[in-house]
Image (tube, rainbow, N blue to C red; front, side, top):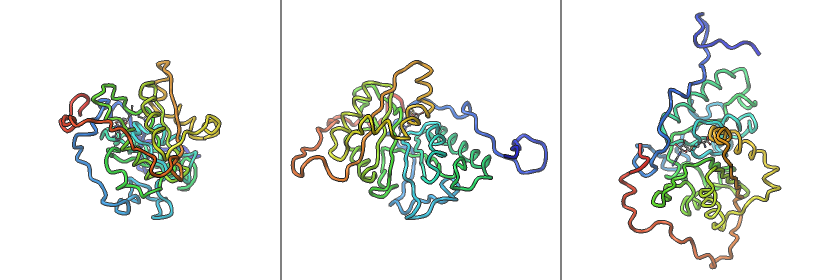
Amino acid sequence: MPPKRAASDEDDGPTIPQLPQKKHFRQRAHANPFVDHQLTYPVRPSDKVWSDLEGYPKLFEPGKKVVEFVDVGCGYGGLLTTLSPLFPSKLILGMEIRPLVEQYVAQRIQALRAQNSDKKPDEPDSFQNISVMRMNAMKFLPNFFEKAQLEKLFFLFPDPHFKKKKHKARIITPQLVAEYAYILKPGGVVYTVTDVKELHEWMVKHLDAHPLFERLTQQEMDADPCVDPVMNGTEEAKKVDRNGGTKFIMCYRRLEKSRIVEGEWKGFTPLFGENDAEDAEGGEGDE
Ligand SMILES: C[S@@+](CC[C@H](N)C(=O)[O-])C[C@H]1O[C@@H](n2cnc3c(N)ncnc32)[C@H](O)[C@@H]1O
C-alpha cells in the first residue's frame, strides 16, 4: 500500500484526515434520556436520508442495502470499527446521545474512509459500511427502522443508572424491549454485555419475560462471530479489562412466533408508578 500523506505535510497534494484525538471530545459520562435533546426524527423510516456523506454514500440502496446492525449507545465507536471489516456487506450504525462523543465517532469514520480510499466500498477496511447518528435510542426507534429490518442489536456496557428511581432510564425496559422485538427480524439477535451484575440480572429478567425472545445457548454464543467483538472490542470492554472487572453477557434470538399461547400472556408488571413526574425535570446525571 502506498504511504499515506499526513494532514500536516507541507506539500500541495491532497491531505488525508488524521484520526481525531479523544481528549478533544470528552464529555461527562451520563446524559439524561428524558430531557429534551433538541433532536429531530423522521416521520417514517423512508424519510430518513442514509445516502448522504454522514451515512453510507457508496453503499446504501433503498429497499436493498439498508442498516441491519445497530450499536445502541456506541460511545467512541470501538465496536463499529471492529465489526466493519468482519461484515463488509452489512450496513452498521452506531447511535450515541452525547454530541461530542458522536462527533468524535463521525470524524473517526471519515478519517478511516479517507485513509482507505484505495479500497472498493464493499471491501473489508473501506469503512464505508459504518456510520454514526446522534440519537436518543429511547425515543421513536420505529421512526428510523421498518418492522423486522434489523439483524443485530447491541447493548454494550449501557449506563447502569444504579438508583431505583433512575431504573426507568435504563435502555432495557419492558416498553423498549417491545420496540426492539418490532424492529428485529425473526432470527435476529440482541447482545447485552455489562460489568454490573445487577444490571445484567435486570436485562436478563426483562428479556426473559418477553414472549418474542429466547436466550441463545452457550454453544450458539461460542459459535457467534460477534461475541468476541462485543466482549473485547469496545472502549468500555477494554477499560473493564484494565481494571480487572468481570463481564457478563447474554444474547437473545428474536422468535418468529410468541413462546406463549395467545391469550395466556398477562403482560408486564408496570415498572414505573404514577409519581414519576420528576423525569421531565432532569436531576442526577443531566447534561
Ligand atoms: C458506558 S458507555 C458504553 C459505550 C460503548 N458501548 C462501549 O462499550 O464502549 C454508554 C454509552 O451509551 C450512551 N447512551 C446512553 N443513553 C443513550 C440513549 N438513550 N441513546 C443513545 N445513546 C445513549 C452514552 O452516552 C454512552 O456513550
